[in-house]
Length: 234
Ligand SMILES: O=C(O)c1ccccc1NCC(=O)[C@H](O)[C@H](O)COP(=O)(O)O
Image 1 (spheres, rainbow, N blue to C red):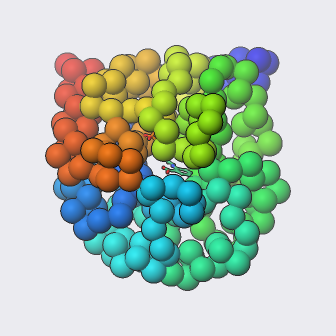
Image 2 (cartoon, rainbow, N blue to C red):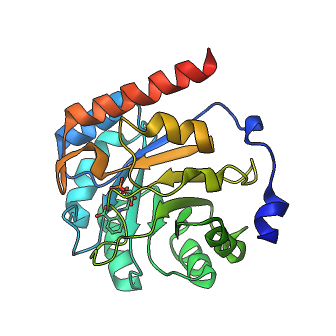
């Protein structure tokens, strides 16, 4: 845990801005709710086994509503160049989210190939997992810390499972990341209080069924975030 120790700086010094990514969008109504709530990022899933899978050209159509409002993120899992070419051409993302076992060399290669910022996802369950950050520092533009998938899950993400957010509290205040995994309107206040992250990400916590985003739940989530932030500012 030497690496975590060396990064330990008080989170109190973080800026008061909070990025919010709503992930797994497939409909205009969900997109409208995400933008109305003030999402900074909207995510599209390009993983065939996911109930949130969307074709690149459909994502390209949907993401138009976000131009100038929120960054459109293409979420991929160990995708090959041919599929990434199709995604980038069809959707025109602002950012790639790499949710598989991509190495730091692969991250660097993709940044050079597409000229897009990359968010590398690391799945965590204990503080020692943060040691896996090291090779990506200075290469990935941003990180996402997500929970490890439960046993038997077919999905690397979108499982609605949380991890112990306190393990993020000692991270360098300058590290740009999103806290993800199992967030919902009921627990987001605790997540913000315990980890004070620069960004958060949610998917299944704003769904009425797997892959079905509920605009009312999206609105409720933003309300909960605002209430938690108002409480902390008071
Ligand atoms: O959501 C999916 O189906 C998915 C499938 C494959 C790779 C990543 C996936 N989701 C990525 C995300 O960014 C989710 O928002 C993140 O894992 C949190 O999901 P949840 O716990 O449901 O909020």
